[in-house]
Length: 158
Image (cartoon, rainbow, N blue to C red; front, top):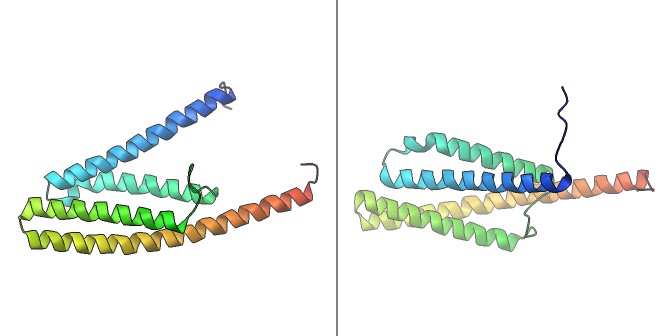
């Protein structure tokens, strides 16, 4: 049985925007729930389900974006932007883990070390991650451009 599309183009665009916002609300909600659970419970196993859903969903989005040659809706690919994002996320993660450590164990030295180690670790991991993803993205965009040029050469009436 074939599904008949009953929406016009404007309704389909509106539906896509609603689904897009819903996805971002769900992913942000999962992240907030994980952070809250990490603050109030020492056992990290409480967040395994939420973390798995967040990672799988984010991974699917990332792979889909790269496959289709999409980087971001409003910003072009830029190594500088990726460095800034890496720095901000690393800083936020370091502060979060340092504060959580202080709330749990009340040891300032341990909290500072937790901040420094997590900040530097995250910064290195994210820098490498963005470098690899950036290369994959640029390679895919080049492939898509070459494919479009080839199709244009084959069909000059397009």
